[in-house]
Length: 251
Ligand code: BTN
Image (cartoon, rainbow, N blue to C red; front, side):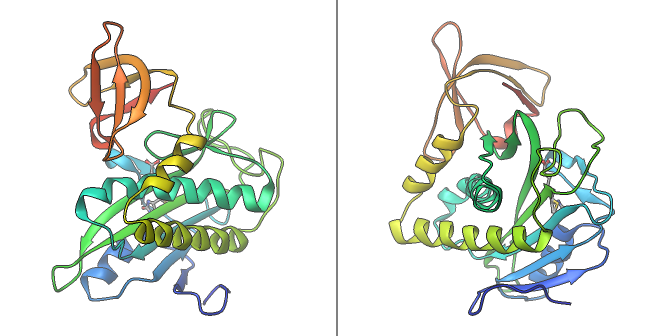
């Protein structure tokens, strides 16, 4: 039931033929006392969750669908960088295996040629003693030849081949390395630099749709210290938006 990962890997991979939501399975395991390092991966996710209560649909056997449990080991104020770190790790893993260089659309969509290749959902879950762990949920479109929406793509549609197992191994290695560097540095400085390099949002004009129906338009200038996006509107006024504040970001 286990997929091969490198020796001395900190990860324990549990592969389920079918699962409603790997994030939910991983979160339940954390609540029962499972330590960090658990990775739940499924061949067929039947009720996947996306950001803002959206659904994440994947037919059987065509995608990488997984959730990794980590103890980030960074101060609470730095937690909002976690989904951005996973986005960078995902880009790095795809690049390592295929040579393609995906980009990140803020906050954490992974794009290839302006279409969505992967989605990320990070959730904070309390272990029995009250210590918070992070469930890093990742869905990458790998073998799909058709997708339900024209704004999505897959590695196969981009003309490259890899396996779900290889991609999982590379992704876990990149997540581990990224978190290790972040802890060692004591802050997300190197992560910010990698994120900015891969960002398809920064420097561009964007339109952020807000939960109440409002809209903010302007130039995406930079990220603040919490990984929030700073937009400058046409009057030159800066606006700070957090990942939870934006329903849709159009680039
Ligand atoms: C989004 O783009 O809105 C985020 C999608 C996240 C999907 C992944 S698939 C594995 C993990 N389990 C879930 O239920 N969701 C995440």
